Length: 234
Image (cartoon, rainbow, N blue to C red; front, side):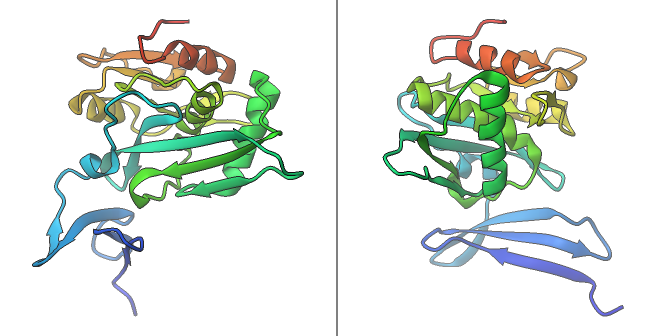
């Protein structure tokens, strides 16, 4: 046996934060991460990574949605931002930072087919705040929410989180550890959530209102009502 563990030490240029990611571990769990901050005395552990990946805006802003990502056994709250702007070029731009560009193109097509939202004449930019890279499909629904919010220039509520996989047929699929994600969000003061119907908790999460959607059009309706002044059930 040649290798016991493979660790990646990741950082973005200009960022003071470093991520150690375990992709192979013969004697322990893989896909775990550790988050550290670099200061004048070296690396220091970040005990609450969600705090550094969330930018709390003084006022609600359009195109910003918080999701709960899972890295290994850890739930982390991260902010997904989108900017949708009319394009004057023959081929509108599709730029993704921290997400797979092909998946963003797929979500744009699904939005058009199953929700009647056309973005073919718009430039689309999507970014995950803090230099985080999201590889899981739970980011689909927050990306859709951020795109709609930016397109309509209508901020969503700041205490809202969303997660769920969007399928090509327009269905909203559940993601693993749904209840754990909701509890992590509630622990950080979030009071509203839009998730896949199969991720609706069996028992209510204290202090949180959960709206569950089975189809993309239901989710779009719920997100349309989850604006900065309140949320209503569809």
